[in-house]
Amino acid sequence: MKPSEAQSTYNEIFSLLEKHHSWMRDTVNLIASENVHSPAVREAMQVDFSDRYAEGWPGERVYAGTKYIDEVEILGNELTKTLFRADFADVRPISGVLANLSILTAFTEPGDRMMCLSIPTGGHISSARHRLWGTAGRVRGLKIQYFKYDEYELNIDVDATIRKIERLKKKGKHIDFYMFGASVFPFPHPITEIAEVAKGYGSYVNHDAAHVAGLVAANIFQDPLREGANSLTFSTHKTLPGPQGGCIVAHEEFADRIKRGVFPALHSNHHLHHVAAKAVAMAEMIAFGKEYSKQIIKNAQALGSALMEEGFKVLAEHKGFTKSHVLLIEVANSPLQNGRAVEEKLEEANIIINRNLLPWDKRFGRDYIRPGGIRLGTSEVTRLGMKEEEMSQIAEFMRKIVFDQKSPKLVAKEVAQFRKKFQKVHYAFDTARDAYDYVKLR
Ligand code: DSN
Image (cartoon, rainbow, N blue to C red):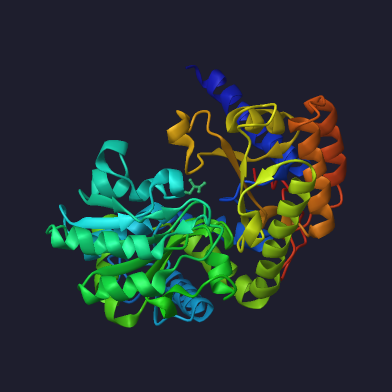
């Protein structure tokens, strides 16, 4: 490539970035694992920390030049401890998967056995088996057993799981590690009774709160460290609206091993600008997290009701659809027939959602390419200030695409018009910039 061509590609990159920002201003984003962070979090992410090294723990660094980095990281850990009511916090993991792998590295050996949720029942790929290239199976070499799952309740079946644990134990198949948490997580997991059995056998219990970290922080979903979990791993960019990244909180007795699982085992340098941004997000959540999280849940429940009224089959109606930010909807019997077709048509209409396997999809020969369901989350629309009334409007847009087969291009215009009023981030100290402003530094 000639230098002049490099310059035009360089220009094209920036043009694509600006187009993305401009598109985000017009869209309704209902991806359950995403959110929009505040201008303050964005400011913290673009500081010089991104060019520095600070391997290790504050006060025990392998590099010089870290005096301010250390102070910010200590503040980040302290804010996280306050927010999660925890003795120990480590804001260094650079993703949720690496937070999980750090814990698995600290508390398991290859060949150990882990119990978690399967992917069709909401489990995450970081917990999956060797043959699925899951992190726990393929990278850490763990054998995987699944929690028994109640497809109607959309939750772990406690009695059947305990019977399974005892049955496996009798066969000499001890479970060394329990991973609660999920990527489809509408209802709190029943940790207490299972953790009691697990701990009776000397096993370790972690809760992967990636999706629900903000709700756990606000103490309105579940409180895993008080319900029997030894530690909590999570990502910092879902219901907790920080930068992309991971985090661990735990009871003090597990701190030393966790620190070593993070460094040196899995991170050389961690991402210091993201540590700064995480610290800012934790402060925002201490101040605004309760109010924000309550509205996320109210909006998810309102969206569930509104979608039912529009003709969608929203799961778990008998329990009010959800107690978190997430909804699961069966679309296999809709005119579009599968989650992928729904995802594609809605995207054309400026509504961003994702397709999702339903617990029973495999039995109907469906896979994750064309699953029977879609998953929706209300974290981002809530951050933009939307309330229950707007959820009805969103459900109406979705009905026009999925059931009325209206032109996505026309609906896209209506969605963009609807979005005009919701351009600021709420639940933050500073909101001078709009949520999706493109900030030029060149
Ligand atoms: N894959 C993400 C999700 O959408 O749930 C979690 O990492």
